[in-house]
Length: 635
Image (cartoon, rainbow, N blue to C red):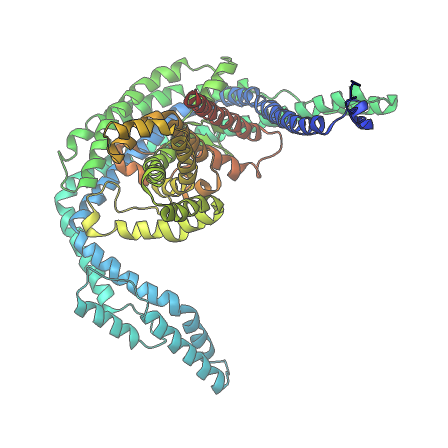
């Protein structure tokens, strides 16, 4: 039987004959994109390291100038003078908190009456000024124009009277009388309403009454405040001397930098004439070495005076605590007095150690590179662009970022995970179709829009609520600053909820259905199955969702820049939970705020890149940890 020949395969395309194929092109396309991503990431890391690592040698030089010029010597005394001023401020705040707390009723009544009148004058002021300016002698407005201005003033007046603020501490009769006076007030009147004046006098009388038992405390505070006058005068005199020396050293450093730049350009120049010209310019710009020894010796001659004023201040401060009241009746006053008592031993100890530090200080002691690194990582001050000395310490920025993240996660974790559990395990199809898009839509809201909402709505509403008498038991109430840690944390929580929700729901979806079926077969309820089987099985994925939400929070910039308050200072933790209602600054916010204003290549410029490197490392570590938990869940 003749054997049938099988059909021969079609001839390959000419591209396939040359080693090309559609599948290979697709693989090459995606592989090249993956490789490009890796290259871009490597370039970002190299750029950050290149710009950032030059910070520490530059900062080391600044610290050397700080020591060589004598600023470090003066700061031994300035530190104690600043501590004295801060202690005086705390005592004054405690004194007035006690008086105003005892006169709180009169203070609120006076403030509410003044706020009502000021709200009215703010709204009617522009139109009132127009009427007055056109009614003065020497002006000849037409009757129609004056009538129109008067009519506009009356309309604005009616509108303002309809939008007056609430006055819960004024009686209805007092409020009506104040409004009636405002309504019938002549357009050219300048005096305050009688009720506003009477309530202000009533508050002043209450203050004087409650200040009488505190006369001894007032005298003690005044005595302590005046005790630093000699130290203040000495610090002021020394400051002028060392500042001039520092300016000479910095000018010489700038000339030396320019000289090295010219020499580098000369070395790379190909034209001999151009090379010779650059070399001669470099030699001409050689800076004279500034005289440091002379000013330093004059400064060190003040050592006996420094020791003397420190000893005198210590002697006068030793007995101050014993003269202060044992306790105060108002909670805020008592807290501030307690802060002063706890801080006092540290202040006395610093005063006692100052003479030894002054005697042992040497201007020619080298500043190692490790000092610049430790100053950056453990420094409590971020001071830039000042006339005295720039310091780059990230602790206040790190503290602000951490506290805002804590507030955000405390709100976002239960909200995001709770929503994910409900949608995945308990919600009906209609509820899922509604809840999931709404939560995920939050991610589409620009962060700058959320920042505006925080400034204009949330922060203002929260501050207004905080003044309610029924809420004064909450730590930190009433809120002094509407832009603070808590406000920023709430908005960041809103931004991180979609991330936590989506990833947590994916983790719940990845739990094999056999787990739930086995649990229900054993008689467990839906709630028992969810909380004892499903959630423990998805725990690694849920933890990864939390970590990625934390990464989103710690890396956010615009919201914290607009809403956190931007105060570069470690929060006052003595306020307890009220610490979360204080302003703060963050690592991301400082980069966005200052990077566009600093000179290119300066120490300040490079310091911001080091902050960026630190942020990059933190977020990378968070994402790597989350990725590890995700892989653990898959296996």
